[in-house]
Image 1 (cartoon, rainbow, N blue to C red):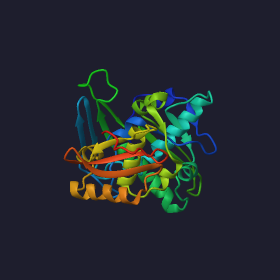
Image 2 (image 1 turned 135 degrees about the horizontal axis):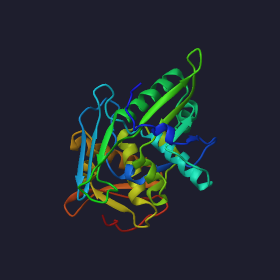
Image 3 (image 1 turned 120 degrees about the vertical axis):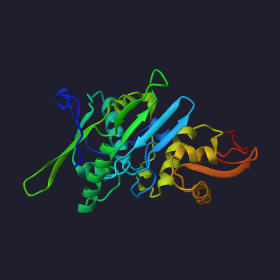
Length: 282
């Protein structure tokens, strides 16, 4: 298990938040839906993710042992956000120090509960802890970068005989404060967890973030989407994947259309319940 040095007494200063039982609507952090914070590939990624657009700067780095946290690992962040928002809405106290059983996390995110699933959960926690992020998002000055890992530290409580009795993890303040602001969280389709492709998952989150319920939908140039994805694939391969997704119309709750507008290839998207006759403006 990866170890990280935390500030003196951090654990002692935080009250323990015990995960709530039962299902709850999945919630995602808007910032994580908009920008390239995670690897889209299941293969280990060591090369950093670098993104810059206007005042927004992001650099994500991993370590050779674990690689950068993946978009599948980010399901744990969705679970955490969903727990915290549900507790807040019920008037319950929340905390960056969270406790849950592996079974609760696995079943909520649509995983199995076999030995391999528990092993993959531990590996995901190691990647989330060892991945470091530096970003100007939500900083008072664009030149100031906030540095953190997705999980400050985590530990597993093991019963005699080796069975897991539960997990405890500490979330970074940057993530926690964003989740606790209602304006920075969106509900997502529970079927999201069943999406298997990295670009498919990333595109759903981006479309959900920007498309929302706007009647006329939204659009992006494919080149801009490519930059926002942080993908290591060639642009031609990335564009082909997006075109195939549009052909399949497989994105939860949204319709997609790839077309040339203004001399550039663009992806347009809108909610399935809205069928505008005109091409939405990008």
